[in-house]
Length: 338
Image (tube, rainbow, N blue to C red; front, top):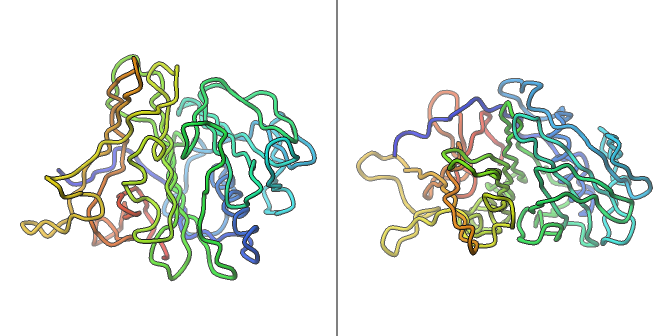
């Protein structure tokens, strides 16, 4: 494997702080709010390597704050964090949601963040290549050909964080390309790991006729190597999308598995004794849904790595362009505080 050369420029805002960590619920709401704010480029804290271009910014299609709702391009969560506007409750009860649209160059892709759980550390993240419509204070809008983060049933709430430590410094780290494709990590100071990794990428090297090359990856953990452990991402819920023709959620298949004999590569392989370097391997995708089997290409600018230190920089000298998150090497041009 050659050196992990990035295929395009990436723009980083790392070490941005959560706006409110005084209660567990507000930590969880800050996690959700910061995801929306990074996509809109309204986060002011943290460190930037190069200013991101305007072409990378996502826009709001509509939202609910639990009191009013509409697909009217209004951000009812506002640009200033206010936990009272992020109401978390099961579907059928008043709760908050927001729909964002990527730049057209990415698809466009539509993303709905639905706070449809009474457990404040759970929410739904739903994606589509079609616009969302409808939506009330008690029910999110819907779209055709949806897929979800961390689940094969779009709209099912997943646990997005397991770290509710109070009065600590929680941070977000966001990396985006000019088309709006992104990586987003979270962490808490002194833990030495990232506790979540989310990415939304269009696969490259796909076959002609693959109409759904977009994949959402998500993993969270506070133990071991933290979020981004490849064993979690590898299954069909860890990196989720739709079949090539769009007729079904990718319920079988997913990311390639790497082992040498009986030895797992990800998070395990030590530095190469011949070069003293850690090797990296690409992330290939495949669908094995009945009658929909297809090669789905490769995810760009993300690699599987061995047991290199989490947070470690590449290159190791000069200005870094990538960092280790769990078992993955991803673009990140600012050294993260862990």
